Amino acid sequence: MTKKIKEGLIVECGSMFSGKSDAIRRKGKRYEYAGLRTIFIKPQLDNRYSETYLMTHDGNKVLATSVCEHLSIIEMDEVKSADVVLIDEIQFFSSNIISDIQSLIQMGKRVYVAGLDLDFKGNPFYVTQQLMSIADEVNKHKAVCMGCGEDAYISHKKIPNDKIVELGHSDLYEALCRHCYDSKKEK
Ligand SMILES: [Zn+2]
Image (cartoon, rainbow, N blue to C red; front, top):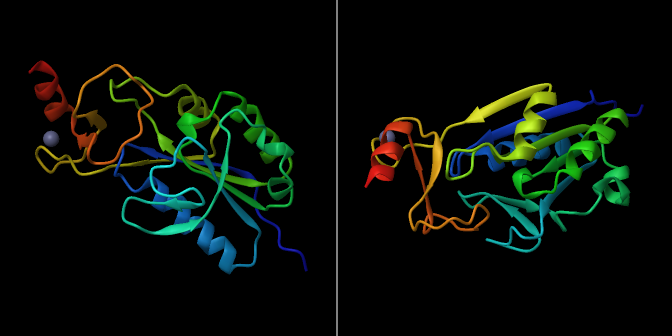
């Protein structure tokens, strides 16, 4: 009997350190245990931890395929043969990824994406925003505010500059709630 999976799109979004990458890592592992074919994909520019692993901030990892953020992933044989496609750091992909994901759903695949919903200025990332609208399910993850311990809302850049795409870890970013973000911005 061939295993059949329900097609669709699930978006796991939130600020940095909110556990969204870990959410798709756990989902993918579950499907692997169930005998389904999975592929983890991440953009090539996200090489903060490792070239070949999808690493989460708490150190868990799975094998991932790094692809150019402009590549059409539906052309990849590993994607064609997968039942479940899991993509991390979705906000870094070019907007072609949106139609690619819609094609994958039409092909009967289940797609999980993890990504930032807002940049450090509080503006939505276009790709994440579009995918949230067409998703079957959206989960917003919350990090802990480094200022007060409440739920965080945004990834605040500790060393200010205008670069929207700048890779970094806790050396560069901290998760903050709206209140703590506003009071830091005013300084
Ligand atoms: Zn706070």
